[in-house]
Length: 123
Image 1 (cartoon, rainbow, N blue to C red):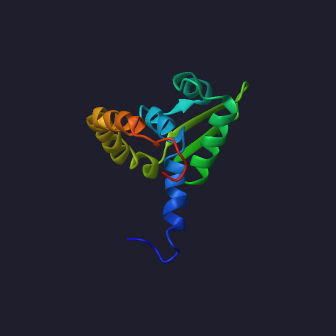
Image 2: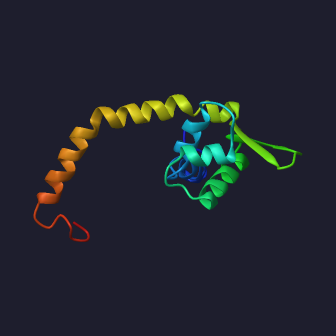
């Protein structure tokens, strides 16, 4: 059901979920609670700054919880909330769909690229 806001709410949620790093972080946290450094190590290519920003956004949206322990050195752990955990089945479904159809998609991209004028704007 689309809300009466012209789809802005749905777009905002999908923008978060479809962000380049969100699903990788959520999938990694599906394995359990992790410290920042462990999470960073398990996600190749993500910078510390991007991991921090994405975790902050996921926490704000209620998908990830952050627990800081008053220790020396400080320890911070992240884990999925029940809402974040509920994202796993649809994410796995989407990933499965992608794996099932990747050959068709790649063939279609190749055929499209071979069409005359395929790279032209407005084509």
